[in-house]
Length: 623
Image (cartoon, rainbow, N blue to C red; front, side):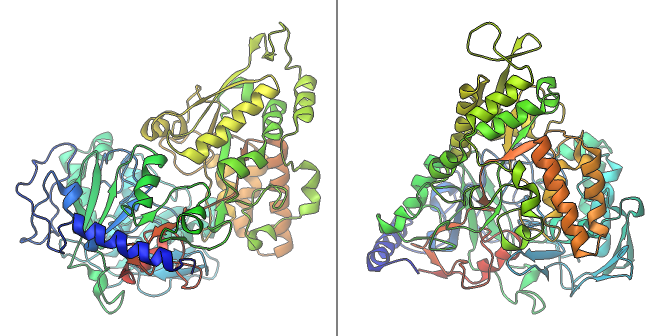
């Protein structure tokens, strides 16, 4: 595609060097002693073959390179738990559920979503799902070949128990408001019954590709050992967890996470993949930040990298490295979402002053963000005007651009921002250069995780815009775990005024799911909320439209509703997008492995692990 002769020669040199570093053979790593199981190290899982050598302290260096696929940019910090229905697991390689494509290396969903085609491809399910006439009941069959790693069958009751336990422990998930119950017709057939008071067929379909299925027997075992205590269950480390996916835990500490292939994986049945995934091990070294991860990627120590890298085209155009992206031209990835700055409505100065929110939003220099923070790996807001839609043609056609053109902004409007603040009475009364509200200097903290270099750079530009309009804004970049707990998922926090996260990208329910995440009332006050409306914004008019759209069938009515939601969003400014961006960054180093997803092979660019992208693990070849 883009790799010239120099890159191919370099790939061979790198591959030979890596082989030499591994001892020059493909032998299973030598492992003297198994480290004792601790609170931080998962026990050997039941699917590990009896003759498989136990991992040693030097597992981080002795995995056979030609059997190991290394990932980057996904796991930040040590794994906390293996519990697929727990809380704060910090286990990104195993537990990352999303309707756009859940990560299914260990835990599986009923279907895999392919956002390139809109298809729902069966995984644990058997064949297509079916609706009743009024879309209030959705029937799914379970593949009779599907098995847990302990050899027992995956059943319809496992799906039901996974859903029900959320209610039982007062930890309902994203889909509970939309599903009244799951009825089991047999071991291999179940029915999702919609909540008729909150009818939304979109969310029932999202459940199919977004909800992990956990083993009912394991759920009951975990509850029993925690004496039914809901917090104990949520925090259980789940080192004995059952899983149905192709890989299970092999080794984990604060340096690295390693998964080993389950060679008894049910997916090699003819009804599914018909074979095992190619890599025996998948691993993720835990790097300090994007910079350290980028160095490792360039060196061939990472094969699949989910991280932003500035001027990524230089890696093959100037450096001649065997690195490629989904597209071989700008923006190099498929932009499907927009990282967003969320205003914290728990803070009165934010909640009571739409002029302040809009002034900050229109003052930001987005062209600088796209040119410098994103190195043009995003269309500009002049090219794709801001709305509640991603930049894909299908979504852009769903609202009336002319009807909201007067509300859209491209940024760096310092005069307009100052005029808004002056009109609201947010002015500098003491001559120190900073504006006050209710007699207090307006001081705002903006935040995202440390080491997320493009986001860090974007928020520095946001803070700089504040200085230009007399608003004292400082950046705070804590480690990811701290950020998640104190800013993103805490519905009551009052410290961080503006914080970053991305709304949903592409899913069966798009763009509705994104609009709901930006403004939906159902998320307000939700603890451990990873789904949306992190700023606690409430607008009853918007919420009524959000609830109405899933039941609309007339295309003109749907377009009018999305246009009105765009008008509300751009008028009230509960948050503001900073850039367009791929759902996942997807860059690969082909010095060891080749045949990764690209624009010609029909597999989506979701890092070989998410949704239908996991199909690539079955097609990889050694370089």
